[in-house]
Length: 84
Image (cartoon, rainbow, N blue to C red; front, side, top):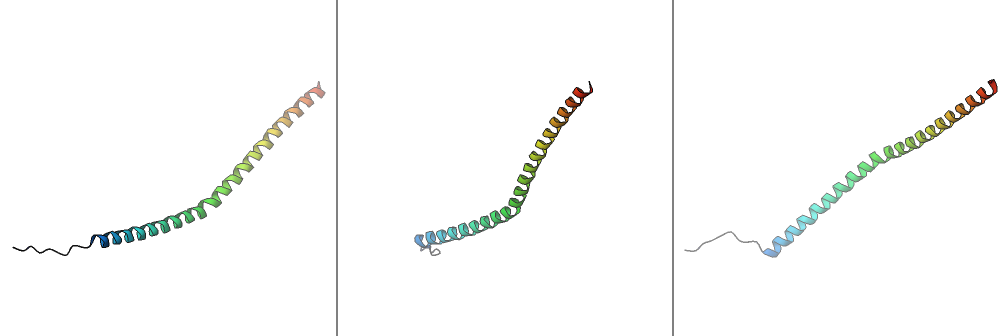
């Protein structure tokens, strides 16, 4: 009895095909990651810059408010000094 089977692909050919597929999928993956990173950067960077500017302005406003409070306190003490 003779058993016939489907031809077995050459091992080297199979390895070569697998490497080509892996390289193709790796390149495709890298392209998708690069596109996603670029899209996120374009979306996030302007907002990040805006938040940084807003934070700096908020700190400046707080410094001015503290200075104003000190000035009012000093003025109040001066007024009470002159009134009594």
